[in-house]
Amino acid sequence: MKSKEFNALILDASTDNLYVIVLKKGEIFGGKSCDCLKKHSETIMTEIDCVLKESGLMLSDIDAFVCGVGCGSFTGLRVAISTVKGLNAPLGKRLVSVNTLEAAAYNSVGLSDVIMDAGGGRFYHARYMDGRELVAPRLIDEIQAKQLEAGGSRMLFDKERDLTDNLAGVAARKISNGEFVDDLTPLYLRKCQAEELRDAGKL
Image (cartoon, rainbow, N blue to C red; front, side, top):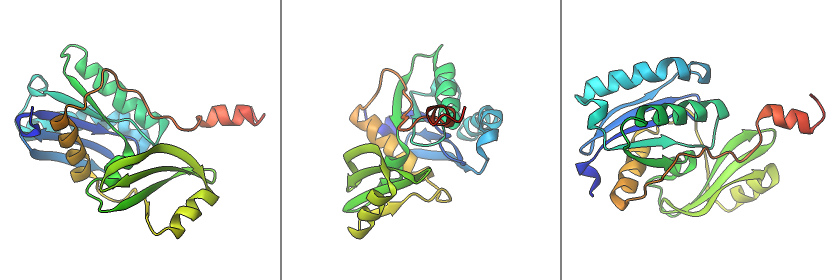
């Protein structure tokens, strides 16, 4: 089915920004809210209610739930995924997963090596050609990140950049292509801070 025939609710809480977007027959409502990660769980339902009202839709009108599954904050990913699962439990709608790096690369031309700071001198990386994935998201070190910079294709993830149109574009493309998933799985490429401290003998 074509994406313009679909109504979709898109949620992404993987970064400091919270995205709550309704895609109504190809028209975009809502978008970026600059809430810190600690407030995502407090504001996400309010934002959903506001955007649904703006679009004139109810949850029952939604055909597909689209969720950002990472890379990014462990807490933010859990907030978005658990919210989508809770909303969809009585509805049984279709599910679409989107990762943060592919959203950043959407509509990029040519080769793009998207790099996102993962902390501790490590980076999330994925490679795209004209926005299509060539290398799946992975964890790399600082040396590898600098090597990618020398190639001239490196695209640093900018957390201040508004990815509303990108998320909507990726969602529409996946819906149109029938790229649905049976379940939403967070994209954890590194251990959480507590696990890292434990492995280092600091807990």
